[in-house]
Image 1 (cartoon, rainbow, N blue to C red):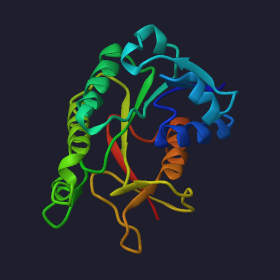
Image 2 (image 1 turned 90 degrees about the vertical axis):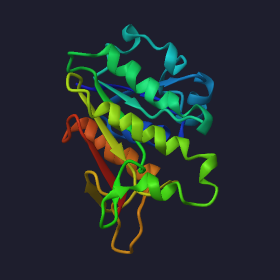
Image 3 (image 1 turned 135 degrees about the horizontal axis):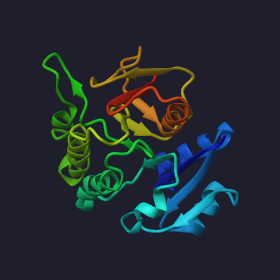
Length: 218
């Protein structure tokens, strides 16, 4: 039986790679939950199912028949609080249920790093020009903190490495939980293609429940 998966933000960088990987798996029927259906068809192919609707206009009835809902929603820095708002909306729909499973693509700022295990968002805040976009990792941290207090919804979150970028999928993937990971070359990055493959695997064969994990290209 094909898994029915709805992807909010399927035309974004992470969402589009996940959509392609999920379609290629042969085990997932994908629906792109997007504001621009024409853009979705152009990017993802005419075969992709589309529900054209703003994320905040989605109803419980729109989502109830999916096995998995993936939140790959992205915002501009000045509206990054919407990441928390959308997570809260999705959770509110499915309290005291086990289906659909909610999957959240989070940020790296909520990961710990250094000998003192401080939050990586503190390092990000010190980089040049960070004041222009620091609200995004700060709100992604708030999103995770919200989810960590949700005990009656079937959810999982995933964070990339320090860099989340375009590139080929990794031939080897390194997994972790709450610590910022580095590969053998001392790099910490995750390509969107790698994230797409990792989440496709996690959707088909769940390994994590009510927790956040992290992955990088090895």
